[in-house]
Length: 244
Image (cartoon, rainbow, N blue to C red; front, side, top):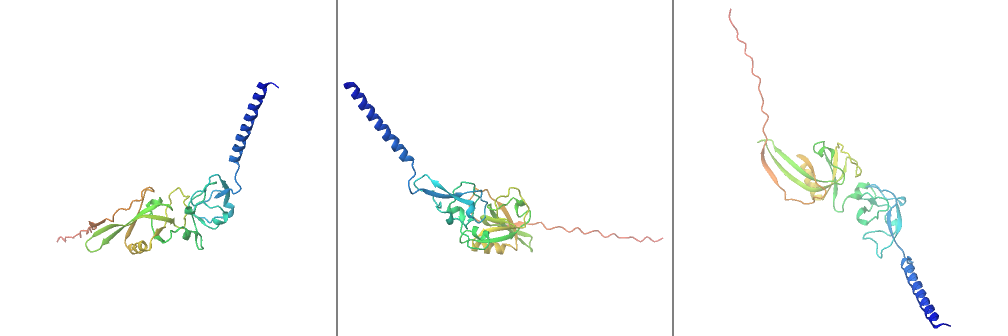
């Protein structure tokens, strides 16, 4: 047998073994292991403030070595909880975006631990012409009038307060403003006491930019003169009697 032919055959066999080995490694790298990681995602669009049902969620495989922080690996871990945000299909459900539901209204599950929900009666002016929606942040201003010297003091009572609901609606789906009669705020117990005392005075809600979370020092403006309404007395007509 020709020596040159043997050398070429040997080289071809070596290259064939190398190609097979590389192909085998490539296939093994793409085969999922026996223990596939799974995460719970939304199967359909899930509105804000609803109790999650099994038909609304599903499991999908996760290609990474570790799942996203706060993600769930089983549907029974999220079923029965309340959504604190709107979820879109295939969006991962995390623990910071749902709340545990222990009975009562769904609104109670949306309240931050340690806080309270308190409703405040508003009108079209106090409620910023209906532009305040659930999830917005507001400041609360109180104006107290003195009856004796026609003066008033204005103070920013509370700042960066979260609105939980307007009237009996806690959904964030609304886009158009609507005149409401009450706004439910999320307050600490101390803030609730302050708000309760301020109900006797004139209060005003001011809408904040969602990116503005700064809280300034409380500023009280006193001795604001209120001009009293002047009473205009009608002049008495005097009839003059002329003797004939």
